[in-house]
Amino acid sequence: MPVIGKPLLGHLLDRLECCSMLDDLVVATSGYPENDQIQEFCDDRGTPCFRGSEMDVLDRLLRALRWRNAETGVLIFGDCPLIDPDVVTLVVKYYQSNTGLDFVGNDLSTTYPPGMEVEVFSMDVLAESASRCTDASTREHGTLYIRTHPDVYRLHNLEAPPYWRRPDLSLEVDTMEDMTVIERIIDQFEGRIDYSLDEIIEYMDRNPNIGMINRGIKRRWKPFRGE
Image 1 (tube, rainbow, N blue to C red):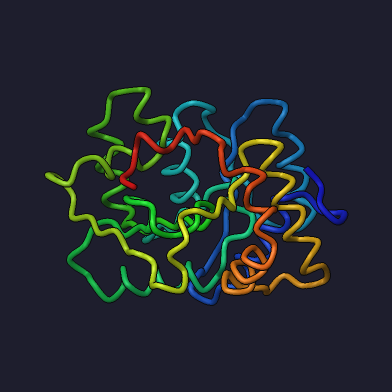
Image 2: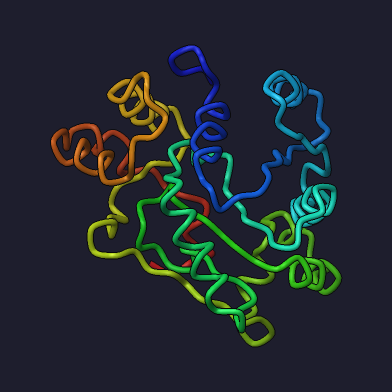
């Protein structure tokens, strides 16, 4: 959906391009015809786009990262257009500094505002999880097999520092109510792509009625993570 003349995916990619910790970006979408517009948008801006399975997201993710010769995967979800590059940097640096870990994310439990999810993992671990996981409903959720097997993988949840610990603010896009919230935020910072999570929180706190617009939405991810 367009906001200020640019699809949400464009806002997301613009913000990720501000992150110095990322060597490459690839958009992983499905081969369904309705996603041709994603391919076209990526082609126009010069962003690699991988087309894979609609339902087997684990396979799509693995093949997309292998296509770009990745050694480490950094996963950002398409419904998180306001992701702060500083949050990405924090999670990546923690992973790099703790070489004994297989997976570092800030979404094993919810301490950041939803919409700020980042996952970092080795390609060897992702490939190994793909060979182990045979359940289609689990593969649909990408890294879910890794996240739900702490007996097999060394996992770490990076909790939000106090100034970012706002799980009450929903900055993701699942519904039209979410779109209204995201549009208000992007409008507030029109002309900028570098506004921070701190600025978003400050704006939401000054305008609590905006956060109420999508506060009651039931989220599909809640059964898969702690509160």
